[in-house]
Length: 247
Image (cartoon, rainbow, N blue to C red; front, side):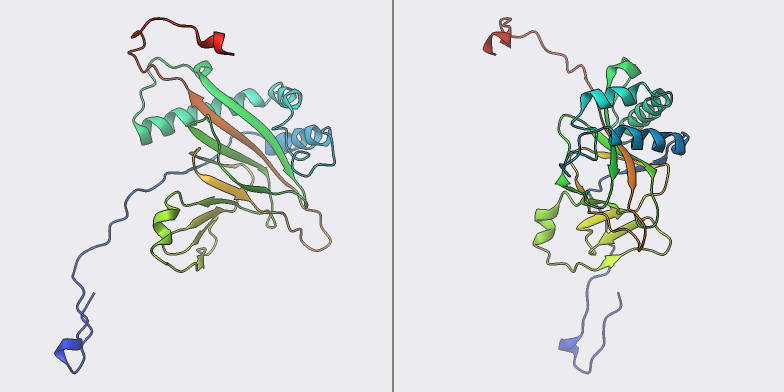
């Protein structure tokens, strides 16, 4: 940046020359699911229609209904979906975390998924996912009125002290929207077939739907968690004891 000249030397603005370095990024992967999204959407509507109604916190999702999740597992497309997400999980962990998968098979990877059909009353408050390494969402059916998924910066306590502005910036024709120069939050506006994969500790939310005039609101997705057991070695110290007796 060039100094700002004034008529008095002591009033000259002279910041040091250098560069800004962005550090400590959080990687999120955006991909495309290779499935017939119309077939998947048809099943999602059917399975959510079968759930008990009356509680807007549970009626739109199979998360709380293991029998309904099992029905989804038996769909003809589900095995391909699981394979794609598990393989992407492996590649994410290999490329970003340098994790060795030489003794790991697909069946060693935990994959827990659930269907969501959001209508007007439904939203999901800010939360993260426990007992998993990576989490994700496959966006089965969306349109221009579909609410985004919103992520919150994990360094929020540090950003608070910087007193940055909260201007919202979304480049033209972009699916990404950022809040603040320091990115206090990040929103993703999905299209059919998109999926995101992110570290499970990230806090995120989905706002309540707002339908277009004279139209109903529908946003269909399948969310999931992924994890696998790693051999940490050095297990056999101390005297063997079965902790099951403590239950």
